[in-house]
Length: 210
Image (tube, rainbow, N blue to C red; front, side):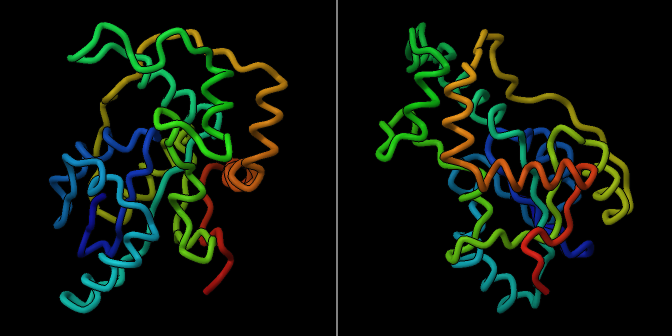
């Protein structure tokens, strides 16, 4: 997560949406930069509202506009699948050795996901305690030019991103039946993503509240 004081923005790092590339490109322009441990870098909106937003307001008089990126829900979960299928320094195989993408998705949306499938959801990450997506500016990761134009305009300086944390090249097809089940379970997340795309890749005030 990055905080830009003069631009009055906070950029959330939604996991598996290309956030690392933006973090590395923009951290030199930010006044506050969380990196390293995932719990800090990938601070969810509700944790931000509970702990960090009050600090910014009380200590520095800041109430930054909130900026975030969403990825197509299937592709975001597929990125998690590939990430957890990769070899690690401690093992030649990933934790999902031999598991199909269908089986991984089934585990992710199970009522009680196993440890390897506890990846949360983009909707939950971006929602307040009351379930409302309280983000001021929401972009589709598949339309990077919109986000770049927005940030360049607000920061007053252009920037370039480079691909980081690229997932390994693994064939990960999803059957129509499992995709239909995923869309049923996460209908709100798909609907929100579709709204962003329909708006041209950028949605202002998705909650529709002042």
